[in-house]
Picture: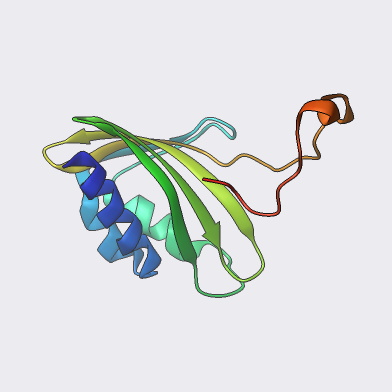
Amino acid sequence: MSKKLIAGFSGAMASNDFTYASMWLHPDFEYYMPQTGEYLRGREGFAAMNNAYSTEGTWAFSVRSIIGDDDAVVSDVEVMDGTLEARAITFHTIKDDLILRQKEFWPDSYPAPTWRAPWRRILDAPPF
């Protein structure tokens, strides 16, 4: 059930109606981004933040994976707006069949170190 909740939330985010998507969030929702230290509470703040984000086009979301069960789920989602391409790794805590907390990481891509060259190859697209 929890993985279906996160899949539904991702679909709602893809609608680009972030007020609608916030209905998947618990009334006591908390959001934290460790890389920047940003924290917010509440559905309204989440919707407002996403509505205010400067974008080059319509957001598109591609779910790479959703794993977990019960009250803990992790998602790996590609996010694109026509110019920006990013990955969001999100740890979701579920309560009352809604998302209570999200701890979200937005990792930056970087060149592969040359010392690992003997054991790897570079892919143009993710294998999974």
